[in-house]
Picture 1 (cartoon, rainbow, N blue to C red):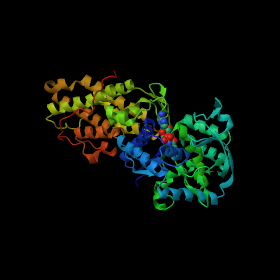
Picture 2: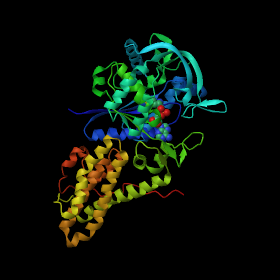
Picture 3: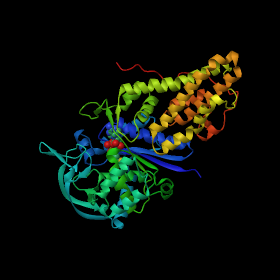
Length: 509
Ligand code: MSP
């Protein structure tokens, strides 16, 4: 039986244009989805847009548009981002779709019939920008305005509201975290969430009456659902809840919800509590990544330093950007985007270490082996270290990707590329044609096998460039999965003339 794997990005707010933060969360999810496919899993990879709430209602009004036309327009930018970043998503969900409203209402009714919802009054500090309530002790005050920890201004609201009995789930959530130590990664985020839950959970206001742009509460249409309850439900809508139980049973629970650190609370506390309260299984994992700064500065519209993924990809090529974002910063930590760091990685690791290795090896095979693949060779003492790394590579990379350690996966890849560059220098196959042609062929075959392993595991990170490299290596399209690495390519395979894979970039002026 094939395993199934359901992987999600957050659904993005449509009050803004896509930026590097959105591209980053989606990219991480894309690489895992592609890796799982390479392992032979059946994958459902979801992204989409979060289109309800007061913030969107306001943004639409500011743009002089009705909310639906406004969200139609902005949602398209996020659909375009999937093309810009080369995402392999299987679906794109919008919370304004009819099926999603049905799913929200079905989940609400389930929670209500389980006694998890009651009507009360909400009174408290609310930040429209975050669509979240804050306790008084969380706020700071400047010039008479109170601010949430996120920097968003808060306002006092009092209105009738339905509540979810979150407080009743505190102990069960803690027991769940205890029993599932990898439910929240990285560990630093898990500790934060646990501390927050231990500090005490109040009941959660889950409806509003002060605006209308949302999913109506079934049976009480003066209320619209709290936007986070609506938004989180997208993860089950997309896999068939409640209309298609077979699809739902196939895909749910999700393997992984990718999120930024700012929204871990919603995914690791509220969402599992809603699911448990509705009698549904909880997702396997939430991974919360860190935030990017730009050349040392916090990224913000007012500072005018927002990084546009489209411009970045135009300047540096998609695969170089994909590689850099996951290579530069340990996934889970904050990181700084700098042009010079990108240029260094691109020139040093992609163009030099990997690109030159491929070019040198394949050019030598062209010239000295009649453009055909040498026979598989016995391992001589000098080849042992290289062969061992090649053999271990898929499991090493897979182990890291199972824990979303992209930077370590890429470090393992680069360690092998460095080893292979050392090997080619020491063995100097270009000098062996006359003196030791048999050994030359052996060395080139080892290098070819090394490149095949490197290109195979790098496909999820740099799909287009690795497709080119695998074609240059003569690996048929249907033999590019991880399992195929165990079967050597046949000797005598005709290889096309190599072409450069990466373009070097001048250091910034
Ligand atoms: N709509 C909610 C998510 C609902 S999911 C059920 C939302 N949307 S968002 O558009 O504001 O943010 C989406 C993602 O972008 C978050 O994961 C957030 O962490 C990420 N980023 C926004 N700015 C970022 C950086 N500067 N750096 C890295 N990621 C950042 O939240």
